[in-house]
Length: 230
Image (cartoon, rainbow, N blue to C red; front, side, top):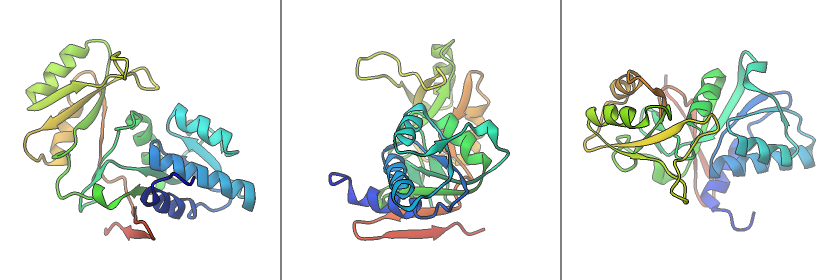
């Protein structure tokens, strides 16, 4: 891991250290989450750590399997002990934007099932207002895609259907599409989430509200842990 971003590595290492034997742990998706999975694999290999991982994407499942982590499906459990994932933005109230990696629906399902939710970020991802600098991903039905996009635009969003490098429309693990939505002015996250969820054809939004209990902020030489205030 010599070429790993030291900020992501410090956050990922600190998060991996919180997993205890016998836990059931949601494993997030993205670059920082991938490093966390690799660190957990090291703990399995060198410490004999035994726990069960619930992956949030096929990509994470493949990486975790290669790392020697025992995996199970979300529906095998009523609750998870921990969920560990990254985020694209986090505001002072620990509200988040997630989904740049394309796994937002599964990430939210796993996060909602966990008793404790841990988010790993670098300091640049702490913002005052969500969605000012980056778009909010919205996972939608591929059927009627243009109609769903039109309805999102009616809410004031500048939209872009996510595509792969080949220019083909991006599909999630569940076969859905993602429309990235950018708003010209800051939006109240709870109100916006309700409006987005009310559009026919929207499966889930990248607004993660009330789904972070512990924020781990990576720095080059340490990781800062910040508990959400109730």
